[in-house]
Length: 330
Image (cartoon, rainbow, N blue to C red; front, side, top):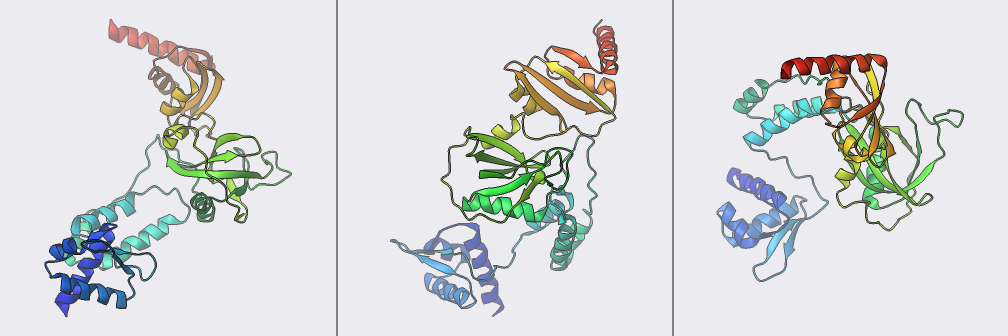
């Protein structure tokens, strides 16, 4: 009985690892005959697992959708990887810190003693880097509403908060009329969740910060998916200057005009920077650091001419840095 149960668990693991299996390959991996494999498949079906038979010369099997949730089967390396990931995952969704801690406890309880000791030896404390300025954690309900609309291809209706405003309120200067968009892609980048959507009313694509979305009830109205503004949607978000970002709360904050296109500056600017389109070859960038010299140094990494430097403290830091570099080069 123990051998059969172990084999059934192994069969479940194999079925979950690949979409389709031939009967011959499955039997070979398990070291059993095809007749025994058929009996094991029937046993899994009796337990509520929807194992589907595939037609063809050799026949085959796959694990269908629905039915019971298969048991979590992890080897030693996978278990340690999950434990580390749960301790270091960024908290970009509200309420997930506690859920991650409970998941780690649940996994630890079912680990064998030697593996539990290995995971305990890797008890970690994740410390946020100075350059990480993620958005406020996204509400799980909002993320679910947006994700469902993207997956189902249904129109999404929502209020959108402008930077600095709170819950949408018609009397709030940050309030905008409800938007009705075709949601196409949901992405996470630099600690922020973004929605790429098309707005029929304005005939334009846009990038929206999900932490500022207040979704209405599902519309259930389908739409025909369009070709995105560029094939690589991730690149589209990373190079979009108008994606709702706001300045990070650094001690020093400066602004300059830079002789580079906005999409280039947007792609390589530090987190918490604000990019504004001025001309096809000129961009206004606002960024911060712990010192004025820090901002000057960051601007130098773009290797581009800058003008209209504000405030005066940043101008002084640029002069100081220029003198310092001249001495170093001499």
